[in-house]
Length: 129
Image (tube, rainbow, N blue to C red; front, side, top):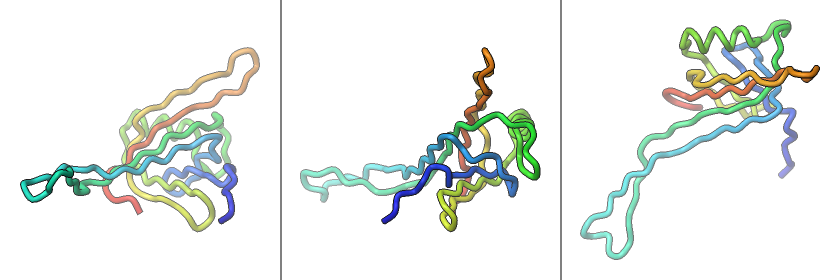
């Protein structure tokens, strides 16, 4: 199995490329419910319930992306609580997709000539494929 280079990870808002991210965390979880009963013996038993997922990313602030999404698009999505189509491409041919909301947005940096970046958190709602 080949290692995946980090520059392959991309986040899309609808069909517009938001960023080749500097850092991304894609979290997929399944809830668990205890189903232990008198027949379980000496061991706790569990069963899966609901799946959920979220994406946290850090990217460079860019308001001049030709044909893609920029920070103003992200800010509008946050302020308007817009339901977004999210695609997280891990590498060509491996993409997680689903609808979700932008739940946090944090621009930072830009002092003493430094570049500005922002972190953003998205939570999926409904099915992730």
